[in-house]
Image (tube, rainbow, N blue to C red; front, side, top):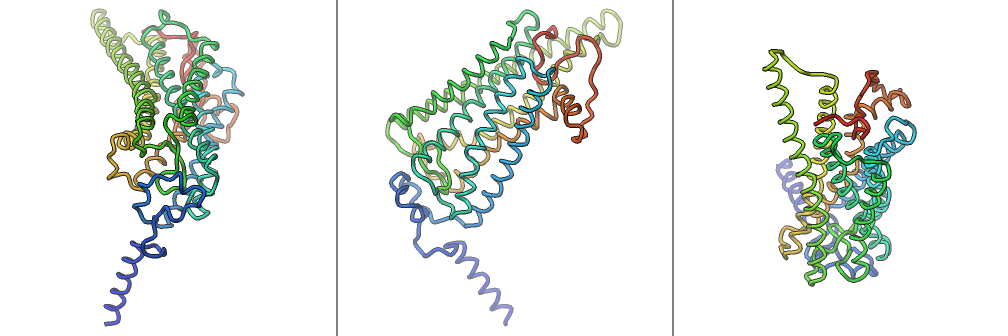
Length: 381
């Protein structure tokens, strides 16, 4: 009997916690927001009760880990580029630009998010910094995807065009990086001048694009961002790698046909080996881009859903978790490049032997550059 009563009490306690989590009945998540922030919170969020406080601590800890990995990984890429001359190539300049963008994203967003998580779970700063916080996330996110698009085009140029393609110089790489930042800043500024907006979102611990307001300015701005800063770079990425795959298949078919005519097993030469190295590098970059798409697509879908007034699925946690997934993209890029690219691994072997990477340096003439290969040593397509 006692056990039965205990089970009933435990069940009732769990049910009560699921409804209130220690808050008085009828409290909404917007009731916990500071008075100076409430006017800027969309009425949509007032429909929901506060989330389980556990989520704030879990998300705070996750962001601490993301910040650690972002500083470690992206800082490593930047350090090796500055320290190791063989990887100071024009193509790798784009990789470093990506690392800088990723590093800035989490170092400017994570500390404030974590503070909010462990300080009651709501936005604890001014509305001005709410807008700044959101704008910094927009600038770095947009810069990253355009930089990835440029890296993809560079891969296409190296593998498909070889010596016939336009040569990427350090000057051109610098201009491309500056263009990526210019696009990002240009796209993040309009909300400060009345086109679009920034506001607290989700569990109201962070700020981002206002994708809930239904005025024409907000809707057109969000549609512009979705098309220009998500769809357009994505088309460049897909188009570049589609052409790379097509060129690889044609190259392999030609090699097999020539080998059959000469009655030999393989025509693999040093040049062919370099081509294979470039292909491995392209696969690494494709994996990296697939990660980025997987991380940002859910959040892009939420923004698009808000544009069309489909608010039913936009709940505090269902919008906060995609935002977390989007920011986690900043942690993957450096580790994919550090692990998958021979020249960066050789740099780690030389300058950071305690990582126990032990990448052997190739001595053969015409050795390919790894990561995003040097333009001076392009393999023929």
